[in-house]
Image 1 (spheres, rainbow, N blue to C red):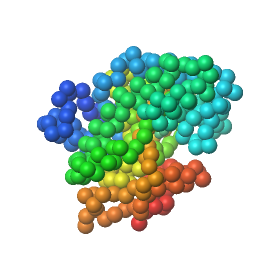
Image 2: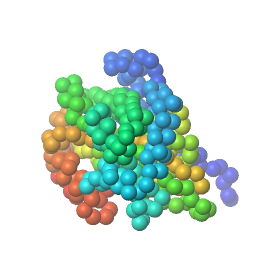
Image 3: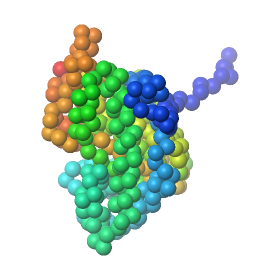
Length: 321
Ligand SMILES: O=C(O)CCC(=O)C(=O)O
Ligand SMILES: [Fe+2]
């Protein structure tokens, strides 16, 4: 007999960060902290309702990124970097729909202005301002999430403070061309992020980002609200730092429809050369240490030197114990 029941569409957990009382030590904080832990343990990802980024600022970010992508290719090439995740990347033969601008040290006014001046020698205050303001506001969600997850594992306060100060902000603005085909096309291949935490938002093109379930069997369509939510993804560095106790969500971008999709993200990235390894609070008889001390730059290099290196299996091969 054919069952008439349909499987409800899979959804990412949604966590509400909008309580005005969301401060360490409050009941609200502890409750959200529990949600964050469960989501990162089970999905390596969640949708965050977060109201500290005004709609106007989101719009400004997508407007300036559109302006940047419209510059002639020769101009965009002025910000091509040796390191793939920074600067301008586009015209990848296997990902023809995709372009990205990555502004490193987006919390630093001089660095942002330097980037802007390479694209617009006469200056472009709106670009610099949108990037810096986005980095500042979204960092609040990044810091809260990382503080919560570390607190939930009993990591001591000094360590947490030191950890939070050990990262920089990379703001990446992505563009995915629309497609005429009726079939879905790949916008960005399946991968795990390498950094600590990634926080993404997108323009009014609804679909695109998909996150794989932890059993690797299904894709969950992320469908963040255009005005009030962000998708938060745990990266490989956070996974190593927390001794594998949180997942790093595999994700990809699929394109369908003729509208151009713009997305923007804050990537927290280690800025020091200190080796990363799990604090003692994360290691016990039940949870033996999984990874050798980890050098972010060396790992980054490793992932770029061959195909298929952007997943947890490759990470284990690289630095597993
Ligand atoms: O555009 C998106 O939503 C995803 C981008 C992404 O996964 C990345 O830049 O690592
Ligand atoms: Fe990613």
